[in-house]
Structures are given as structure tokens and as C-alpha cells.
Length: 496
Image 1 (cartoon, rainbow, N blue to C red):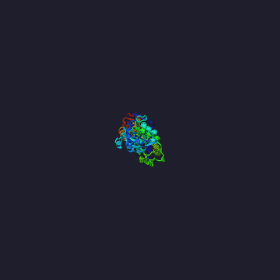
Image 2 (image 1 turned 90 degrees about the horizontal axis):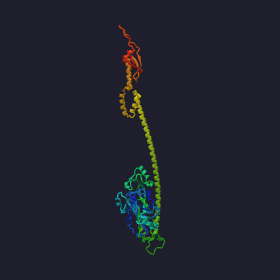
Image 3 (image 1 turned 60 degrees about the horizontal axis):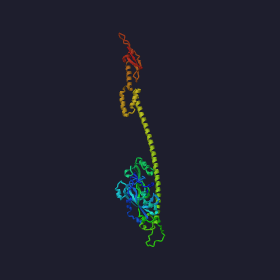
Image 4 (image 1 turned 180 degrees about the vertical axis):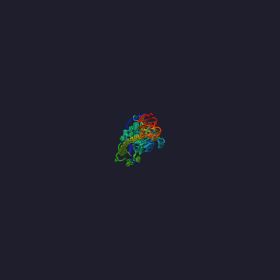
């Protein structure tokens, strides 16, 4: 398994345990049932060790740092907490023991349960419970304080809890009205991910969306428990530890134990027990039965402390490198988001400009079509200004189909205004006059006479027994137009 890319460390300020109504998911029940995790241990045989048990985390529940691990993943990984270090307030330079056993327990009453029983709970939360071993010789005051913190009658009761560190490779963002993952939904849209990412506590957000919903990480891939810490306020919703020790009167003063040099002459007893070769923590586990019989427990403690310090420094460097990589990735994500925002703004501006151009082109085309239609009416009909105003109001928003129907109807009702019709009438009048012997010029628009000329011809006199008078031009026009004509806009009566 590769080293995890990221890590979560749950560190908060110290606080004396005072149950509050808002701690809905706080396991406040007695921690006494957790001592079952060490039912195989006899503390009277290990007076230099302090055995402690407590709830390390709660599956499916978001902790105070805005991080959650699902019930399914919790069941898969809880055993990986075993053999990991226990430090003080997540300070790797203050390692005081290790996790010997890890189990699961019911949320609320702390009864130990099997993985199968935990799986049967569905979306209901349950605890990851650990049994830890601390070396009293490293810090006697700490050991005594831990005992008091698990004593219900002591002032320090419940003031120390367990927290944990975990590495991981991937996570998703969830949003929900409660701290229970079962009530949340996973964010999958990239724009929504960028939006809610800024709300995460890990990104200096408030862990909420401003509408009463929690915004949190759900670890998904590469989850690896790294260790645990004794803290005064845990990030998970678990508080308190319980300790198992031998009766106090039978405990020697561990601080006064003399450290025996390896070169010191062995006991007269021929059953000499020598320190096995220890090169790794696995050697301690495989030789534990023999190591327990050694008087040189101080050498063992020093070796374990040095080994854990070495591993701690190694982990610290690796996690520091991962932090740098995470920061670089976050900066790259922020830069990409900014570029996307700029590109979106540019696209919006270009779209608006194109829409304006299209609108202008449509308006110009509409104007040109209107002008062409009005010109067609002017060309075909003799229109007054009032006629044009009515036409303009009627046709300005017409479709091609509507305009064709309108033009056909207008041709019928405005027949007398049609230039071709009026011209034909004028020509007919001129022809009629000519047949009567009058040459005339008629205005094609008004159908009025402009000029009227008499034909300069006289009819020859007929030879007869009596003289016949010549017919005058006046009589001819009067007879042709029944006594009235218009010349240059004036009505002239023809009298006989």
C-alpha cells in the first residue's frame, strides 16, 4: 500500500467535560463496559504498565473538524489502529505508548460488538474502541492524571479523551442537515464542488453553507490510521477514557526503579534471561513473552521510545511533503477556478455582443422590408399622406403571408387609386374627345383636362336649296360632355 497523499489531525483546545444539549452525538454513557477489551490482562502482573480503553471515533458521524468516515469503511479499517503509537496532544515527540487492541462498540452504552453486528446497524453510528498500553516509567504524573480522569469521583473525571490521526488519498464533499452521513448527499457537479470546497473547515471555512446544512469531507480511498493521541478535547464526538491498574497499595514507586546496566554481573540464579535482539517493533511483539520477564524494562522502554521517535520523524517528513503537495494542488485548483471564471465572463460578454449584432441586423432587415413594401404601394397607387400613415401602421409587423393577403385585399378596395387604372381612364377620355374632333391633354393622376384644342377644320358646306350653318368648336365639346368640362381644374359650363 502506498503512503497516503493527505492526512487529518484532529487537534482542538482543552476543555473540562461539561455535557451540553448541543452535543447530540456525544457518547456520555459509562465507559466501564470498554474494560472488556482488556479482559485477558492482569494489571497486577504488569505494574509498570497502564492499560486504558476509550472510544476513538464514531462511524458515519461528522467530527468537529468537518471530517467523516462511513460505517462501511470504519468496519474495514478499525483493526489497522492496532500497534500504532499513542502520543500526548498529537505531539510526536511525546509518545507514551501504543494501541494494543481495536474493537467496535455500540454508540451510547459502549457495549462491545462484532463487525457483523456493526454492519447490521445500517446507518446508525457506532464507536471504534481501542485498548492502549502506556509505559508508566516515562511519565508518572501523566499516568496518575489519567487514572484520576477515569475516576467518576475525581475532579478531573472525563477531562482526557482519545483522538486519532489518519492518512488518506481521496475524499468527496457531502452536504446535509445533520452530522449523520445518512442524512447527507454527495456533491458530484464540478461547479458545486468548487463552491462547497471553500466552505470546508480544512479550507478555513465554517463547515456550513449558511442555510443550516453541514458541509464536510467524507474520506473514501487510501484511508490509513496513523496513530492516536491523548487530548483534552477530541475532534470526534467521543469523550473520556477508562483505565485499568493494579490496586495502588501494591504498586511500587516506578520512578525509583534502578536502571541496571547490561554489563552488570547477572544474578547468582542460573536461569539467566538475556535481552533478545530487537531491530523492529515486530521483534517486540514476537518476543513479548520473554521480554516481560526482563528486569531491564528501562532499556526496553528506551528502545521502544527511540524506535517510535524514529518512525514518528519519518512519518512527520512524509506527511509534511504531502502537506506541501496538497497546498500546491489547492493553489492549482484555485488558479484553474479563476481562469474558468474569467473564461465564463468573456464568453458571456461575447454572447451579449453577438446577440446585439443579431438584433441590429434583424432590425435593419425589418426596416428594409418595410421600406420596400411602402415603396411598392407608392409605385402602384396614388397615395395621400393619410393613406401612407394608415398603410404603415397596418403592415409594419406583418409576416410575408399576412402582407400578401393584405396587398390582395388593398388592391380591391383601392382600385380607383391604382395608377394603371387611372391612366387607362385618361387614355379613354382622350380617345373619346379625339373621336369628337377635340384634341385634349388629361392629367393621369387627377383625370382633369390640362389643355383642350379645337381641331382647325371646317366641314365643307353642302350644296342644297338652303344654307346650313357651320357647327362651332364650343357646340362640339358641349355636345360631347353634356355642357360641362374641367380645364386646368376649373369647371366650365357650355351654353348653347
